[in-house]
Length: 358
Image (cartoon, rainbow, N blue to C red):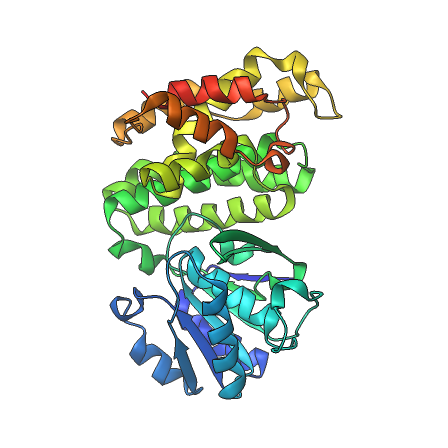
């Protein structure tokens, strides 16, 4: 069972490492690390460590392999990830691969729990990766979705202070990603009472504190947004994402929209379509259940779009509209669409993309 440390933040790392029995840890941290003021705190902990930052924002399989070599070569016994989703994803894969056969491609081998403790300290409030069993890396230019229960970090330490230095636009994007995850998990065909409880906490908390958080005037708002993002991650860990996320990925690669921004411009389109086509519900619990579920969500698609407008989150503009609409429509992963409670055909996806490309 994962432990969540929401009090004392980074100051709790020493006791967490002691509990794990760590003698030496691998610190997986991206380029943001020098700006977090962590070096002195880590030296005060008294546990030796070796730092690994040799990975790009969209981590490569080869990056992970280098991390595995460093972990084993330095005789580390614990992994500490500090950063956004990329750093945590790399750390998850190092944990998964570090006891596997290094002479064979890790992606082709059977996954099992390596038993290596993994501690995650997120520096953004968005993906909730610190509480999920998912990671993404790239091999041969293709995205590899890694899923295994053992890569859920053993402990997630939430340090709100990390969020204070984020640029405003990044705060908006990551917060919107968390909000979208909470909403999508709420309506997912895989939802459970547990996941819906997490979704409700995430959505209601973000709605309550989002404006104050972006104004950067309240430590309490910052703390609550970080906690809400973690709840959204816990919800998605159960349900996985749905159509807005499935539609977002090509928007990011085609127009350079950060992930949270790309998801946010898709979500209202999916939401409205589902409300207008409840009779096409594919959730086994039925259309009446879906109608009640959508009514439970304390905001609406209109409310969401007004917030996007207030935050200045612009919609992408196409250079070659017909060509780009075809690319976008054909890019959507049908497996991810299966989690959506209303079926979406290629024609429907195209029409939604037409509205996104204003």
